[in-house]
Image (cartoon, rainbow, N blue to C red; front, side):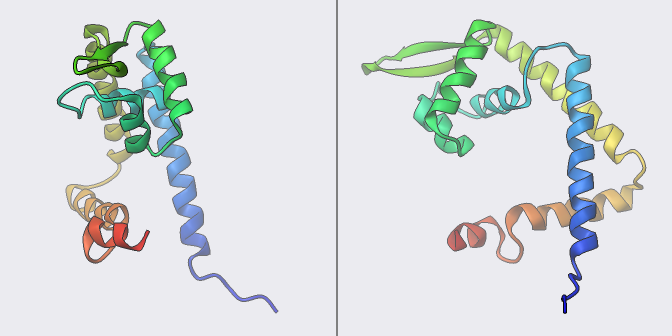
Length: 155
């Protein structure tokens, strides 16, 4: 005898939604012809949050990927002129990753692409529905009651 999965239909809806969101974001990104993959986009957005150029190890930790994955992303972004490797002023053996002016411009375009994708995704919702959805997404992202700290304590 099999047990029914009460969250099965909800899980299916969630998977369909994430696939749809990904397709829409990818299309909006491709329309801008930046030649940037979603992973490269994530790295650029992460770089923008640092006050000073981070080390590759810092990026790998923040992105929750292996250092080799960051090296591959940085190689491609450096080849396209969006980032550059710079020596650490206090330890020349340490390499840091810095955004170039082209990288900052790409970030502006990425932001615009993400914004237009979000507008398309949210278009069918009323203001009230958007507010409710925002609260639900915060709960899912932050790990439920207690927020992000509680979710981190469990992992």
